[in-house]
Amino acid sequence: MNTTLVTSPAIVTPASPEQSTCSLLAGVTQFLQLADGRIAYDDTGGDGPLVIALPGMGDLRQQYRYLRPYLTGAGFRLVTMDVRGQGESSMRWDDYSAQAAGQDVLALMAHLGAGSAIVIGNSFAAGAAFWAARQAPQHIRGAVLIGPIVRDLPISPLTKFALKAAFAGPWRGWFWMTYWNSLFATRKPADHAQYHDLLNKNLHESGRFDALKTMVGLSKAETDALMDGIKLPSLVVMGTKDADFPNPEQEACLLASRLGAEMLLVEGAGHYPHVEMPECTGPGVVKFLKQLLG
Image 1 (cartoon, rainbow, N blue to C red):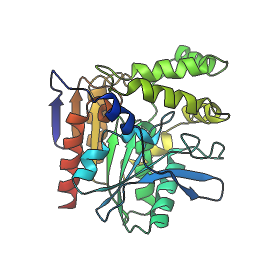
Image 2: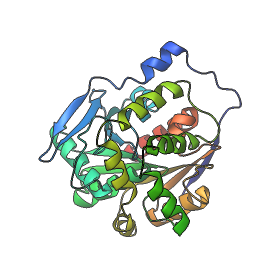
Image 3: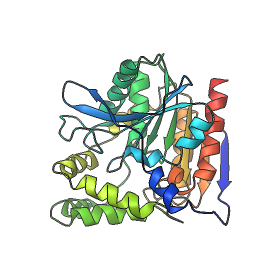
Image 4: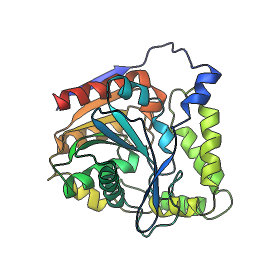
């Protein structure tokens, strides 16, 4: 297990307003029609190695807007997809699990005519890489797991009650967006306000909070059980101030040890190091992918 600690420069020049607005654009939305709904995605195109990226719950595929130029600049073809119930994907499904997301990855690969892909997953969607690799190990070349929530963490009865109450009334939008804001530990990107408005508007579409509530309540025990037997070259990327974990560095070490993975710790970053500190995360991800492909 190799560990890299990267520290953000003290001064970072923010993007101009024009650049910030453009950075939110994920390209022309395309759709994969499945039996129970459709999955929204965008595709940078090209004939480079395919990378499929999934956001975590309660977020949009545009969260990869800052990682995208690093990947495309290195010659990769990046496809970002909205998970079930979120973004522009259909709202109502029978299954919102990481296992279902892994099946959607494989379906999208087949739709694209891709023989193989690398999967990037943030938060709970990191588990999609495990499930896709379990079902079709010959097609999943590796994974980048960003702030991965792939096992059930201890939660107090008080916290369980608070979560239930938070989703029970008209304040649930305020609750989720306040929580989401808190996951940027050191700084927010230049287009944070615009992205906030885009995400908030999307989540207030009828049915999206119901999907999110279901996802929040799902156990990750089955995903957890996959880790010890799966053979998947992986990079665990963790912000050292990720508030979703009692001890982010300890969690990253645990997961990297179980997976035999490499580890990239981003000093001072929260749950979205690829958004908060892309100048640290992007080069590290590209380095891993190039080493993976030889």
